Image 1 (tube, rainbow, N blue to C red):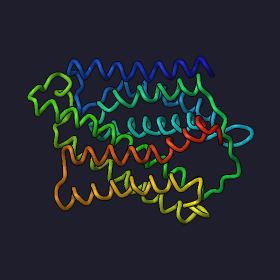
Image 2: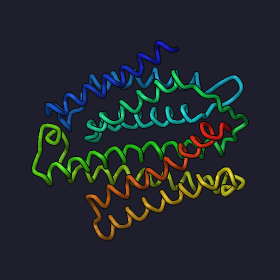
Image 3: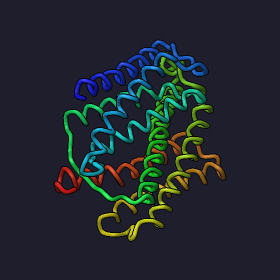
Image 4: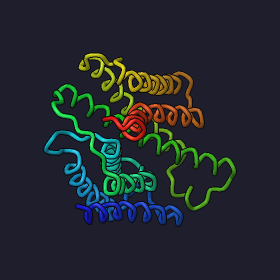
Length: 267
């Protein structure tokens, strides 16, 4: 498993480096995805799934540790990204997504941690799945907004180099960003709703920080979509709202798990 994990990480890194090289040399054609990178990405994704299954599904129960959760979200983001490749001009996002997935795999290999739980109800599993799907899509939106910020900066300073020439037009980038945010927002809404319905006390002491931070993130995305629809918000305002909402989402889950598992050494 260790060797396959190293191989998986290096496949992710190779895919990210290949995309980065194509970007710098303006070799990416946005309406025709690179089939070789997609094939390598799916091979890495399959190997990553095997590693995830062996480390997360244990004989004593589910192991949703910080590292495993980070790896699962990374896997989901890669899956969504590769799937979107066939329909949307998102290939440049791979320069961010693949290296992060590689880091997640390497962390599983070199920094494993046990945090086992058992007896999860079907309703709670649905809530977790909706949450992870929302995190995954909004993570892609955050990556898209970073690229959009870079593109805006270069175009504003009139330096449209090879990297910028590889990106779709600014308007197409913004349209894609809001399409991703809308779907992610819907999933996040259902995730919060399922939490209120299925969890006994969503504001219990061990859940209150996650709930409050997730609601703040939901409000930021809701305000952004409302502002887009009523006032045509775009550019830096849209980027800041997107990154802010995603930051609160990450704090809601990964921040709390980091405090519990690393600082307080609790499950």
